[in-house]
Image (cartoon, rainbow, N blue to C red; front, side):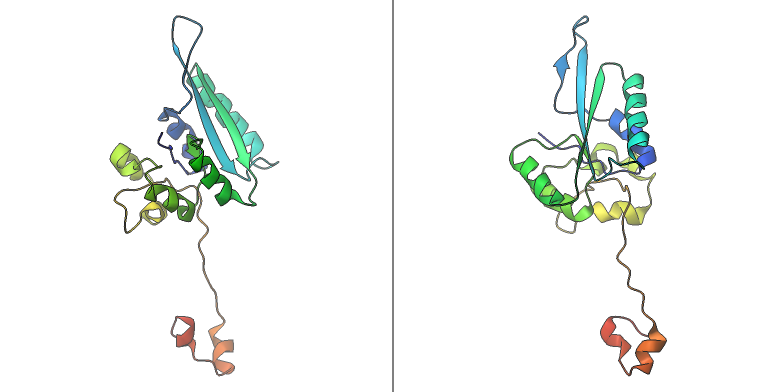
Amino acid sequence: MKLRNIAVPIAALSLLLAGCTGGGASTGAAGGDQAQEITFQTWSLKNDRFTPYFEKLVADFEKDNPGTKVNWIDQPGDGYEDKILQQADSGELPDVINLPPEFAYKLAQVDLLVDLEAKDAKKLDEYVDGATNAYRYPDIKGQYGYAWYLGTDLNWFNTKAIQEAGLATYRLGFSV
């Protein structure tokens, strides 16, 4: 089973859920219609700030896609990578998952993520290149995630104070 790795901007989540096939399809009661179950996993987002938003998003998606049930699970931040790796080892990865690029890399290496470039390259054009490129890896062909939010590691230095202290700024990786 391939994971539908879709770590996306919150506003685009409903579009992306529409493209999921999920792993838990079952036959519906009426006329043999397919009922679809999608597991959507976030990372520490069930809280006062985000829960109302996601509950509405899920309800709207289910309304727009009759027969589809979205099961939203939220994992606490502590040990999140270990939980994901355990899910992968047991074959129980969610269909839609919130993954930072460094976590996604490990799953892409073992072919457990969908190559979004191969699946729908046009959709990638809707995102900022620098953010989606975070899900491209030098040793793996393809693109394995939509940008949701990316924390950028930036270091700010007071170069004047550094110079006054007599430190050489080139050792810190920048020049004045």
